Image 1: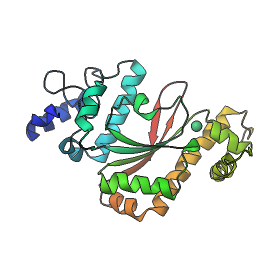
Image 2 (image 1 turned 180 degrees about the horizontal axis):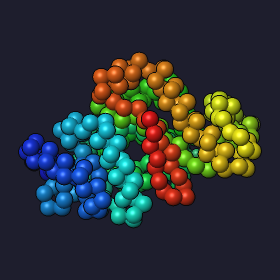
Image 3 (image 1 turned 90 degrees about the vertical axis):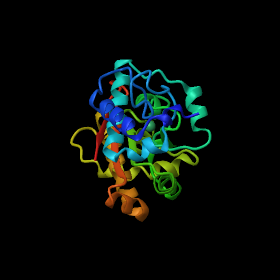
Image 4 (image 1 turned 180 degrees about the vertical axis):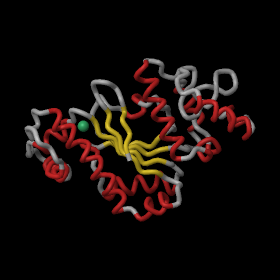
Length: 248
Ligand SMILES: [Zn+2]
């Protein structure tokens, strides 16, 4: 049941704006919780109308705000059961996030998102292939997501493996897709997996190359981006600080 759908569009618009202006207020929830407690059922999933009204920049702002709440330990009071029930008959996610499988970098948790808020693609080293790009095209063109986020993270084991040229079963082929980022990283210090500064520089370059790859290989996403309907952005998640740093 989407009880928040009962709000008038004007009401939703106003409350969304007030949410965006009061980003430090902790008494708000995920994309769907676009107002303070009492006006809507906190924790219900994002409705189509709410998602469709968001611009790509607003979606990015929501994710940044969510990360700030996470860092402050002031996450939204998620009602996962309400979100599950509200989204069972349809989903209207605002973003598709490609991130690493690392257990310490769960996208929804670190950006305080709920059920139905975003599509997730996770693969070691957050590389893109045709299947992943196809998934992104589905997320945006078919299901209406506004943002494609490629998110790497610090101290990434897949990046270290690529630097060390690790050979292990099917992992060998996966790491070969990260290796172009190793050679493309300009770095003056020690270029080894023991140097975390270098590892993180490669991880960032890997995000940039993945974004380039998505641009180059997806006419569908390129078209949506040229229309302003979708933004493709990158980010690095810092395991030490909890900060998700966005970049274009
Ligand atoms: Zn990783």
